[in-house]
Image (cartoon, rainbow, N blue to C red; front, side, top):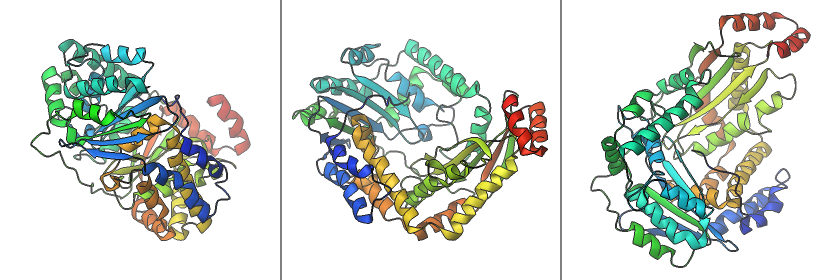
Length: 478
């Protein structure tokens, strides 16, 4: 399931920031400080509570709202899964929409729909999160329903069977029926084989098919616990909200054992080169990946700025190179940042007259330049401003804001908005050079995505032809 980004409600504090956002390019250091003010102002209005059972609660009342957003993030994801139970976190996420003790069957979905509520969930390596947005008058009912399904889910054999089929269909549609995806995913995961991050979030077909009501019930009892839950409520928050939260969640007992712990991965950053051939592949592609650091690492802020500078913004180095005689038809980068592990990645589709080796050399040269010279003060400032803008945009949507609060790192417990920004602001050019040399230069994980032999042969021929010829032939081939 994915977050629905269509619904938007304007946060009054964002309106204050908008004039500054529109002048990011010309912003001075003083304006940067002014632009960040809404993060601090909004943070001062957050009400923090920690129940006796360990549940962390954040209440953020906002003026001029008629609705309220709830976001619940549990510290359980695919990294918690045992051998033979891969995909359980994602499968269980589906189960929580299919009935609880006091709201059986589709009661939850039907009730939320009748209230014009918006609700969804997602599962990742480190966590599972749920959100719902309802009219403020329905908050008490929403809290009651959330507590009932989190604490007392109803796992029937029929429901398990139905959701197994749903997950398997999702697996087929998004992974197995797409060229390159399954073998590429397995290759990348093999780079951290034996670690908690060594298998896919969606799991394996065999493990999903073998799941039972008993095994899923045990998974729930082990990992769905109040001391790993961050609950955030944003919007028109009634004065009775804390009373309702305590009434529905306070009796949820905290297990006697401590939550499962994890540590940063020790990874090999030497270069790796591999290829896969897929008979369904329409054209060659190139996947490059670098092992970086997790969200809680001291170098995470600098790494995020490096990623933005190199690959991920419209003004990134790669985007600028693509404006004139591009060597790629398209490229895509989506960093994976877990709590204790990170991956910077890039997928590129070459032009007809460009070899995969050329693309790799191009990216390697860009990284070497950054490692040697770093950034100018202006470039670094613009990267920080861009990062700040991304944080400010989250204030524009109550669901996004609630979800952000529920994803707070331990180090930011009482500074969930300003803490990440303070780390970005503190990054220096020396940090940029150091992390580039430490995490990117040692080596890249390279995976060549290759189509059938006849397409590869045609592509090889095109690489030797003059550019003027290949431009027209490229269009015909594709």
